[in-house]
Length: 274
Length: 284
Image 1: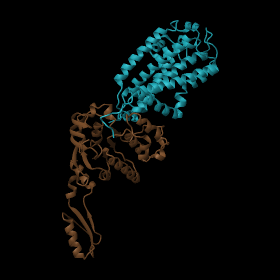
Image 2: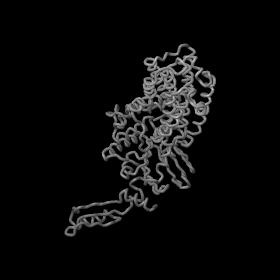
Image 3: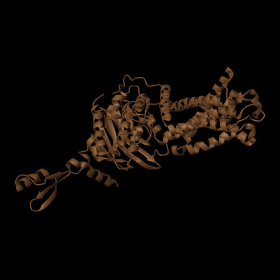
Image 4: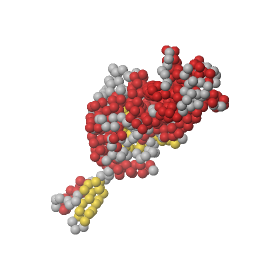
């Protein structure tokens, strides 16, 4: 029996967020089949594209393989943080995970913290593995200066945060976990083609390029390219530069917009809760 | 805590969906330490009522107090004092019994020992099994373990034994009796009349959003005063039965007339099921 007169201290929202992330990571890892395709996606793509498309991008000394490595690092982060979080939340609502959690003395923020921390852990592991594969087989070099390391860190952190809050917002809109992948995947796939993941932006028509420039993935790709490709490659970017300040501004703007949207769209109740 | 304290107090509770009253003005008191059963057909408003008490849903009218607080306004501290066992769900995959019970203990400031709770619900041997490997009954007992691990004063159970085989149901009942002995207040919804009869101190029958009867299971609907049906084998005439308000007197007469033992003697009062079907039938 609890003694209402001398209540024990409630666990903090942060520690419960870590606890959520821990349990979700275990669940994630143990779904072997899903891990192969979600965690392995950018690595599999790297191995395929890296083996098929060899040679340098025309007018540069940059191999296609290194271009893909940067694009796939950004895409992998988005797959984990945006697609993973959105589908995860929609599924949690349909299978009543969210309902069960609401019945516990848990502050709601811990649930979202858990999702973000889990995505961070998976994204970090995935990006490291991808860069290691690209380094071993396709001649990618680690960042050559502390400044480039710093760029990698802020682009990864801002990009992941952007994708995670947008994932939470979309996960709030999708009412049925069973249709979540169908809703999330096609726009994400289209975005990959117009954000410079697979083709240099100069090869994409200006209209599609402009559309791509509205969304975060283009900026994440370009930011990661600035870490791994030589500065001379800036000539291939449509703007002629890495656009670091604009990248930070746009990703920051998406974080604010995504947070507002998430707060407005998120519902604890689902379509089948009666 | 004072004796006879009320853990749940409901007055004039109303909940509507699209203008239809799913809960239509009910009153309810559940005393501390009591096991209280809500019976009723599907759509009677049982789950809606329980979910309002659990703080899942907002009411449209009336007063509700659960452990002295309005569940609609309740905070984390209040949630540490209640345990919820929802209707069956398909969450919690890829984890072992041990892992998930320990994880749930972590949400509470003063949880029970997870191992002890796992033993209590009879899942000691399945501790290291994945939840997906559990049978339906084991899975349900895991749900109860998750509802108990916070050490609740008040436990809500929504149709806890749906889909159990008879033996699993008996074992489950033993578990709930043990909780009651330890002083836990239990509010239970069920389709099963024998379950209510076995476990509950008092039963409320709901039909179309109203409580149509509320009493101890052996008194429900005037059951204890109802006439009894006495049956026997009349020598040379076969089975006979008579409905009477004075069964003892009839049997004494029979004994005298037949010279001692009455062949095939039975005395039957209306079962809870008879009373229940009459109660919900009157409404329909």
